[in-house]
Amino acid sequence: MAEVREPGRSVRELLASWPWRPIRHCPGRFVLAGGPRRLTVEELAGEGVGVLRVTVPGLRDGVAVAFLEGGGLIAYEREDGTAVHTLNTPEGMARKLDALGIALQPPEDRPAEREIGPAGIGGINPAGRGPV
Image 1 (spheres, one colour):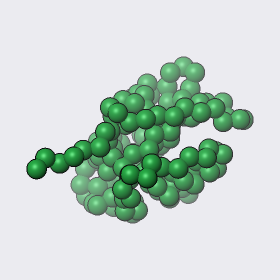
Image 2 (image 1 turned 135 degrees about the horizontal axis):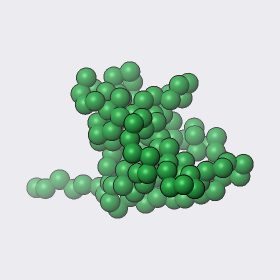
Image 3 (image 1 turned 180 degrees about the horizontal axis):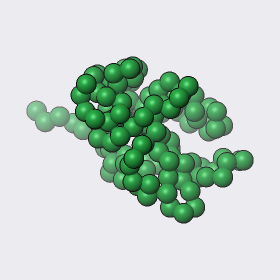
């Protein structure tokens, strides 16, 4: 029987595909380091992933949020078309959304992923260089 695949990419896939670095003092949060600055959340997350864009009072940039298997993306979108993309575990995403005052919950049908440790999820290097 064929495997049923959810739309979009998972946190695990994004960690393996792009150069991410941990955000200092923010467990479970990573920033895209060295990737294209004009990459959209839709291009990064993959086809079929819902993206919510919100304006946060006091924040210069727009915020785009996409839930993925194993966490999600939060991007800070600038007026010039560039963005700062962050990849988050469920815990890291919940903390940041709360800090931004964004009251969202992940879809119920998304399976939980293990916490990202020093070696990444399931042996994937958080720097995005493949298996450790």
